[in-house]
Length: 126
Image (cartoon, rainbow, N blue to C red; front, side, top):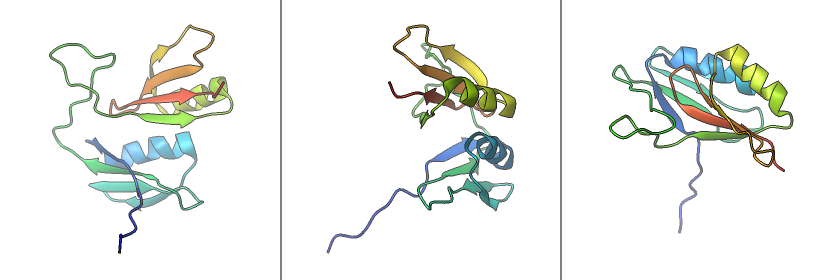
């Protein structure tokens, strides 16, 4: 018999799990479930996959866009939004740093870094 395997949550390394959990709590509106100095989690109310945050004392944020010889991004989060301007405002108020706003009118995407430097994208489906 094949076991059931479900994605529970991507885990992001950070020097401050509780602070990063609060950033994503503000961005996504998901409640914090675990809130410890070394581990914090968010889970959506619908029971779907959430996000987890693990303390990494030696965390080195990736450089975006990539540059030779620097810490490279190995993953990023994509968030589908219904209003890019409003979602961007929430992200920035929560502490996100804008990395790139595509100027092509067909690219309704903004790339940000969270407070620990992890890139994520907000996008509108066109």
